[in-house]
Amino acid sequence: MPDAAATTYLRYLSSLSAYTTVVRQLGVAGTLEKGLGQLLFQEGPHAVFLHDYVTKTYPYVSPNIQQVVGYGVEAFHKGGTSFMLKLLHPDDNRLFNTQVFADMLAFLAGLSPREQVHYRFSLNYRLRHPDGDYGCVQQQSVFLHSDAQGRPLSNFGTLTDITAFRADARMILTIEKILADRRAQEVHSHTYYPAQAEGCLTKKELEVLKWMLEGLNSRQIADKMFTSFHTVKTHRGHMLHKTNSRNTAGLIRYALQHGLL
Image 1 (cartoon, helix red, strand yellow):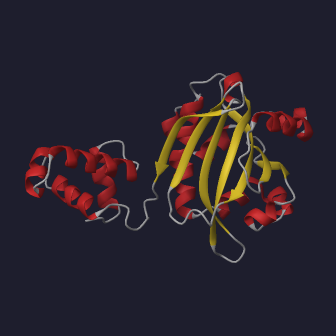
Image 2 (cartoon, rainbow, N blue to C red):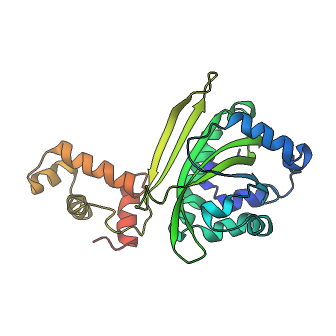
Image 3 (cartoon, helix red, strand yellow):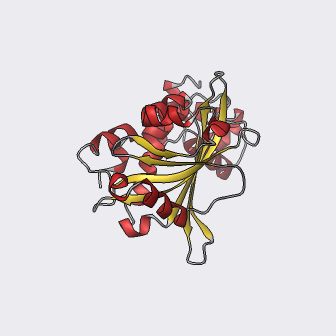
């Protein structure tokens, strides 16, 4: 398994070029049957897809895909992975390519290939419709095939239009384990905030950030803001989470790069 932190989605797909596609070996029908046996659907209208990472294609897309995302089956068959990535909102594309997929790989690295198929991954993101507007979809999927090192080679899932329920730019990744009785148990959840999202940080958080740039520690900042040490620590934690920063240095770098102050 490659270093997840250094693996972008596009680099990962390129690294699979030497593999023989498992989807082709089993056939689309056999793969779909395996996927349907593992994926638990939530209520609502879904479009079903089968994504082959090796060939970067969609061997199967259900006929109702146009009702969900605005594009027909032929567009996905012809355009494959590159077509789907072009539809992604630029902020969501960047986050998925550089952070979300790396986190998914890191989680899978702790599982054997046999175990991986028992976990469902849910992620929301924005897709561009033919009229140029963006809608929000919820993707639920399972990784059906992996190599001996646990590198996922294909996934099967559903897409649901949730535009009416989601208006903000957050991407939320949720991982659930499918139990023996078919119940789903949440084992991981993380929220990603696009760097360009307006109002990403609150006024209080920006004030804390300003004092951090001045070199003050949390206790000194608390004195300046006439608040508690705990409150300042909470603000700092929220900022790290919202900006997807791993530490204070990353947060400062983010603030300078995006002109927050």
